Image 1 (cartoon, rainbow, N blue to C red):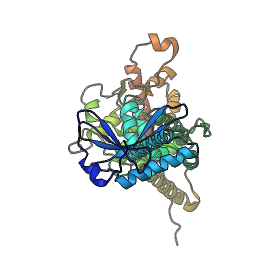
Image 2: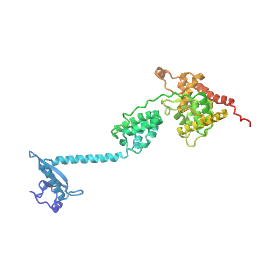
Image 3: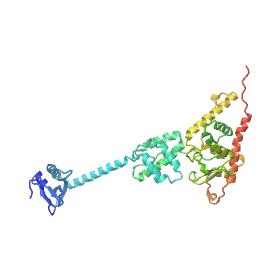
Image 4: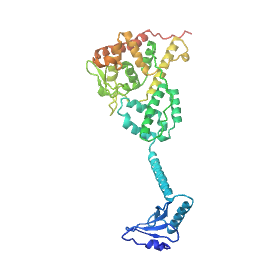
Length: 425
């Protein structure tokens, strides 16, 4: 039978062996529910059309977060008014619970994603996918350099417009780098989507940069100029550029050379590039010419480092060699009586040295197959399956011919240089 509930009624309602309810006579449908454990709660009871009884829990009646009697009556009154206009309190309560659960889930996701910055997620991407690839060093280099301005931004904050602006900026500076960035960035954000870190891939649908094959080859006179400029550089740039030219290997492979890879004391000195550092993933033996051995044996070793060269910026090194070449060509112009300021050096890239060596060797009597072996290009078709000959002897002859050719470029020119005499007054 309903009773007029009071705050003391609520406080002193004692638990019994079975759960029981006390109906409030002041607010139809309101019930104080008392459990055998002593827990108390408020409930609103009503009947749906057809007489089906329904109970909606309003909240606790005791303990932390409990509703007071007045608050419980207000909640029951709200439910009663909802019924009067055709609503259903139980349905609304379920909708409220779903909304609250969604809000909590969204807050939890937001809290987790505060750490999902490009910088942090890239580290996870490298460990999960990239580090096992042969191209790992290149992927890390491109993404680490080009996405650095996004480092502190969340991955799901990066939009397609951001990717387009970045690709355009890189394209203006280095078209090939832009193509690499698009490929690597697209895969990175696809990986992010697979981990539900972002809903869209900002690199998807961006324009593909067409890569134009380079064909720049330095002339003999440009090589002579380069060799004279190299001699003006300081350690380790001087030795690095010499070895880059003499070995005809890739920039990063020479730059990361280690002493343990070198045999400088045998009758056939070599540099064995491990597969972990080569572009095609295969170990590569590079015979060392006497000129290359002389450079390496004359170098001081870095303290506490297995590397031959200390880390340095290739871009700054290239700037240094450009400046040195320009200084040489202007000095020569002045000796000829020409205007030094009118002289220039045609643009070239470090990788052009490798192409220049490959293009010059046939003039020295080296066959194309041997040149491909010197460059560590992977053979294709039947040759790749059956051709297992090392070509070490042929490669040594090719690189020694190349070293002699370079040496002759400078010695022949220097013997013919005659300084310009000043006219007598």
